[in-house]
Amino acid sequence: MINKPKSEEIGWNFDNSYAHLPEIFFTKMDPNPVDAPELIILNDSLAKSLGFNADALKSEEGIAVFAGNKIPEGAMPLAQAYAGHQFGHFTMLGDGRAMLIGEQITPSGERFDIQLKGSGRTKYSRGGDGRAGIGPMLREYIISEAMHGLGIPTTRSLAVVTTGEKIYRETMLSGAILTRIAKSHLRVGTFQYAAQWGSFEDLQQLADYAIKRHYPEVETDDNRYLSFLQAVIKRQAALIAKWQLVGFIHGVMNTDNMTISGETIDYGPCAFMDTYDLATVFSSIDIQGRYAYGNQPSIAGWNLARLAETLIPLLHEDEAEAIKIAQEAISEFPEQYQSKWLSGMRAKLGLFNEEKDDGILIDDLLTLMKKHQADYTNTFRALTIDKLENNEMFSTTEFSGWHKLWKARLERQQESKESSRQLMRDSNPAVIPRNHRVEEALEAAVERGDYSVMQQLLNVLSNPYDHTPEQEKYTTPPRSPVPYQTFCGT
Picture 1 (cartoon, rainbow, N blue to C red):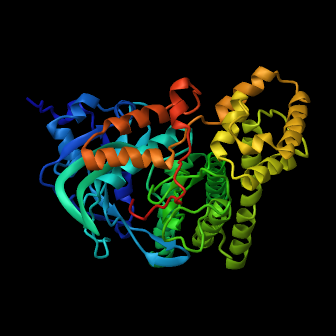
Picture 2 (tube, rainbow, N blue to C red; picture 1 turned 90 degrees about the horizontal axis):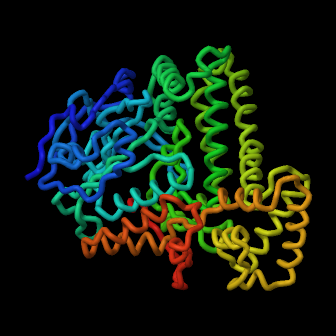
Picture 3 (cartoon, rainbow, N blue to C red; picture 1 turned 90 degrees about the vertical axis):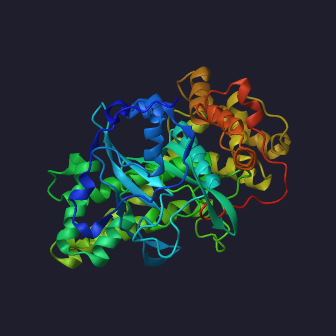
């Protein structure tokens, strides 16, 4: 018999600060109920950190909330409005298939959005059905949790339930709903929406809200809006550097998919790079390579410039001076990103200190990797565990020369060889969510109802820096010569 715990036994502890913003920013509404929800997976450790009773969440009542069939006490469901540049084109957007049910206050006092993704139509659906298929929702669960394991700021996945309904996406798919956890769902696109369709007061209230929620340390600054912009720039520079360092390709870096908090959001056509190549693209609709791996830093800067534009009325009462202030702030992004990336690459090579030619040493290795079509993750893994075999590049004279220079560089620092090895182990994942492994897990789950493959993959990805023998079989790149391709909505 299924237990039916009271709401307080689950641990709901809602506050709804976003609902205190002007109503232009949201529409209050209830989720669309579904026929026969069933729980597929619950993130027990995440649930406990949020203050939930994980066992109670698996009850009939918990599943009903995940499905949108029940609104827990204290919740205030709403769909958020925002806009965004999608592949460079500005458009009105909003939560077309998602709904914020409330903000959970954790036992430690932290605040997290709880959002249902795939919960049905909203005011912003633009003709869509607001639903989602089981494959895409499980994919987001896998990748977002893998990113968390890699130490990259990210939204997270609490649960996935099936709905008992079918949805049509070229073929009939089983419906599902993902429960997404985020520091907030404030986006660059939220500010673009305010600047385009709101008043000065609306924009100011949004900015003050974002500062209070994410950057309270700047509230008392002389120009808190400039400090806010600079803080977002700094956080995004660090985030994009982390993406590049592990070979993550977001695939759809529209301004509505860049968070103010600095978390990675929206795991649609994303994937991880196997063979090193700056031009790597996986998304089927990114024909021009706008969001290719090598373009991600510059696109992030472009997106942040769009944020700066929205803040011009707040930066200074004189528009010309405000534009100058915004331009100066944005001009700092490339250097901040480069500094974070270079520091991360030094760590991947076991380097603690800085030398002026480090950039050349790093670039020469990447050039060799591109020339010999070397696997990005496995190259650094091989250097980390000192097993330079089964790779064409390692047997070349060019690499031998580079290797000698690297060894000499390591000798010139005070730290021990073992300290360098540990730094490399901490900086180079043994495993990433290889695209073929993710597809293997999704096929087993969607086609056969076998979730064990996914669970095994999640277990391995939860500790990617362990470098254990059990991870070995998950390090192999795909054998298929067919380029991997992803699709929006997946």
